[in-house]
Amino acid sequence: MKRRDFLKTTVLGVGAAYMGASPLAGLTMEPGTRFSAADTIVLGKTGIHTSRLACGTGTFGDNHTSHQSALGIQGLSDLLWRGYDHGLRFYDTADGYGSHPHVAETLKHVPREKVTIMTKSRARDPQQMIADIDRFRKELNTDYIDLLMMHCMVEENWTERFRPTMDVISEAKEKGLIRAHGCSCHKIAALREAAQSPWVDVILSRINPIGSHMDADPDTVKATLAQGRANGKGIIGMKILGEGDMRNRQDEALKFALSLGILDAFTIGAENAAEQDDLRRRIAAVNT
Image (cartoon, rainbow, N blue to C red; front, side, top):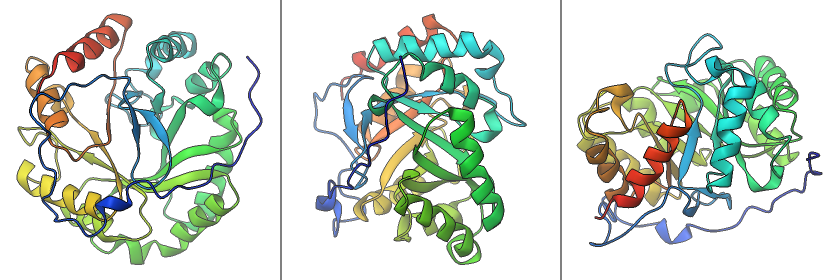
């Protein structure tokens, strides 16, 4: 299928109801709420509609490789394409995972405007960010990126320290090269900064019930994300299974994530079709 022409998407005011809400409002879902991995959600106030479950491509992702990119371009693209057929329309990638070419291959077979691509850059310098945005679009073979995230923020004052780099991203958004921007956080101080920053459209945060590979204890992270949501941010969860520490407690981890009432979506990386099917089945079985 040929790549569709890019049509700019107007940013909608979805999520305005969260403005001014109590930081701890909506921490739990109504009893009996049912879910599907393919549920269509809206990311904060971005106007981006996508699936509740993002297909992660970065399990143990670093240095341009991951468990998913190791499947090969055809192997991973087939898995993502298969996910699309089951309603999974959200692809979570990053420069560090080495999975851009794999996603590009998938885009040959699915309508570009019907999938959401989130990628991440570690650039902290404006010129490097300009280069990354250009390179990422070429590697992904797309005119635009749905979500561009500043990857692995740890500094308490990062929104001041990296303002020139953020301005580059804002300009790219104005030009239609990206639709929304935000950050992934790896320290609680950086997460608190993200929750308050008007610049941040979307937060990608580590969250699970046992505090594994998280920025702080679960209650602290929950309260911080609730504040971000009250401020209109889209909230995406990662490390839902604690980087494998909850591999034998998946139902508990998924129920925790879905019951919070904070996460718009979350990302988990399946490594084969059986794992993808199992995730969809487990999510559908969660009953809050």
